[in-house]
Length: 187
Figure (cartoon, rainbow, N blue to C red):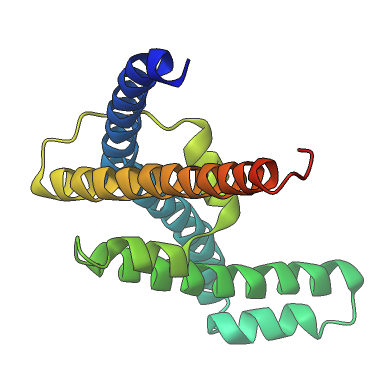
């Protein structure tokens, strides 16, 4: 019975090996495409936040105030409405600074450390937004080829690691069952 299953299982193993390898290549090769779309979205958020902040800056300029003075007048006005708007402007200043820092770090990352910088700088909400409209692409760059190759190695390694684990478990269980039969212990 085992010899009868040997060839179909070998065929299935080869097929699974190739399918997993292709999936690894295709999925990892998408990182540069996803990164570019994420960076574009981040740049859009930054441009919009800067535009809104510029409007507050122009308003402060109109009253011959710095932006910090303008925010301080709002926050310390004693009026709950103006105070809350001052907090919103202060948070916007912080948001612009954080977005600029993230954009600069991601934009300056090399193809070799881009994934690491991405993991350090990622904004989860922006990640979800990018993923919801992500358009896969065929990588035609060296970077895409490198990520594809790394995907191949990773997928192949995981598949063969799992296969080796199952083989070891099968051998262990078989040896326990075989030992049980030879010693007269019912299996």
